[in-house]
Amino acid sequence: MRSIRAVLVAALLAAFLVPVPAHAASTTGALMITHVRPNAAGADIKNKKQVNLNGEYFIVRNVTKKTVNLKGYVPDITSNNYGRALPSYNLPAGAVVYVHTGSGKNHRDAKGKHHVYRGYARHVLPNDGTARNPDLRLKKPGSKDDNKAAGTLSSCNWGKAADGRTYAC
Image (cartoon, rainbow, N blue to C red; front, side, top):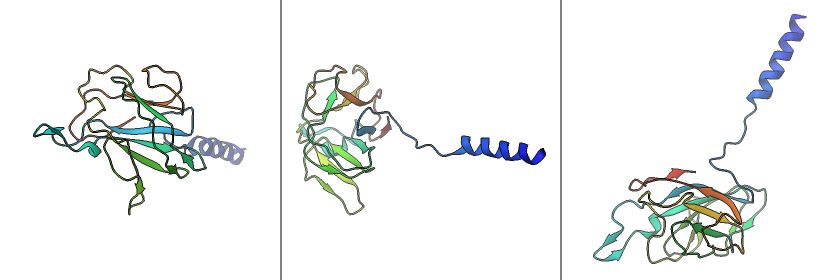
């Protein structure tokens, strides 16, 4: 009797101790925003020129078991209408991509990190804490950048952003 009870207790404990993948945010699609750095380290403007645009970024994870092309997914920042869909880039299963505000060549670096660039000449992620919630939505291809929830797959919210800090969603 005692050994049956021990086996049952062990089975119940094992069921509750099975690791569950941790997700910083949720998604209703193949991609999920996991982190955002809305305020690049250092000054945003030097000598009347926007600087460190690529220090401002958000991170998206492919939560599927297949490669997903980013083309057409819409980052909708609720404090503006700078709707520029993501470029064509094949993101492998389970991989993350750093989506930078500025310009550069979309690539996988020597450390295996993926990077895509939105091509803006100004900072676009709000960092003053006054924007409406959520601050960033990732919408399915073909969605409008209209500050509305339609088409949203994943979202991320932050308040006033500290200089150079990355926030988990």
